[in-house]
Amino acid sequence: MIKAVDLSHQVPVFDGTLEILKDIQLEIKAGETVAIVGSSGSGKSTLLGMLAGLDLPSSGSVELNNIDITVLDEEKRAALRASHVSFVFQNFQLLGSLTALENVMLPLEVAERAQPLKTAKEYLARVGLSEREQHYPRQLSGGEQQRVALARAFASEAPILFADEPTGNLDAETGGHIADLLFTMNNEANTTLVLVTHDQTLARRCNKQFVMNAGKLAESAPAAR
Ligand SMILES: Nc1ncnc2c1ncn2[C@@H]1O[C@H](COP(=O)(O)OP(=O)(O)OP(=O)(O)O)[C@@H](O)[C@H]1O
Ligand SMILES: [Mg+2]
Image 1 (spheres, rainbow, N blue to C red):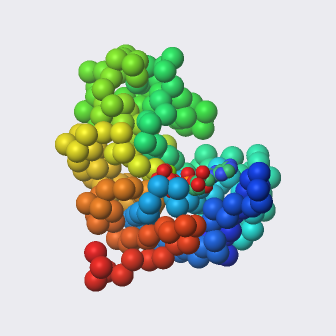
Image 2 (cartoon, rainbow, N blue to C red; image 1 turned 30 degrees about the horizontal axis):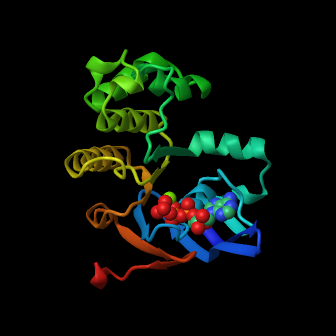
Image 3 (spheres, rainbow, N blue to C red; image 1 turned 45 degrees about the vertical axis):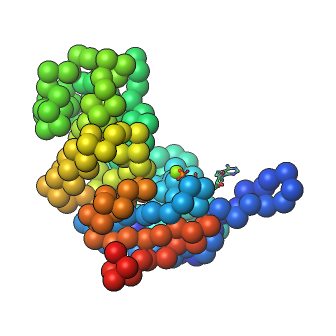
């Protein structure tokens, strides 16, 4: 489902070149749940962006569903993302000028899905926010905003979900509820999940765990978990 081969990324900095990703090899099967942990600045978000086709690596390839996304032009990559990928971010990334319902509905409308309103209402109900359909993000707590973001992500019914620190801005209890909801919805939809987290409890709920260390990725042995 997701395959990265010899993935490397460098960016020019004032005194030379910064190596952000070093020769990463990764294979994730359909329906697997994968956690990537590692210290701040080790390259986790950069890797996620490359796997999702948001950015292009300096070298190496990324396949989604057997399609090499690194050789596609921006338009084709955007189309592949739209049909294959959804996201949940640490800072929720809801549009402040749209209501909760409109936030969930917008990507469905862009993708020209049948019955966007009905689908959006169903997914908001799924995360327990039917009463909040007409509320704007600023009227919602962090946990509620992340529930809207989960509704938006799963409503797209994309086969792959990338989540970058989905509980990072929430207190432990709220984060726990969001994690439960994420795994429940993921299980029902059988989505392939790639999760970046600092939270070991969350990481341990995934089928596989990888550790990012200064741009290098290694699978952590089950015994060490
Ligand atoms: N476009 C860029 N130009 C220069 N440096 C960059 C660029 N993008 C990322 N970096 C650097 O690459 C390193 C990895 O960044 P990244 O955001 O992937 O880390 P991370 O593991 O997600 O960290 P965190 O846990 O804090 O979110 C950091 O040192 C960052 O400053
Ligand atoms: Mg990050």
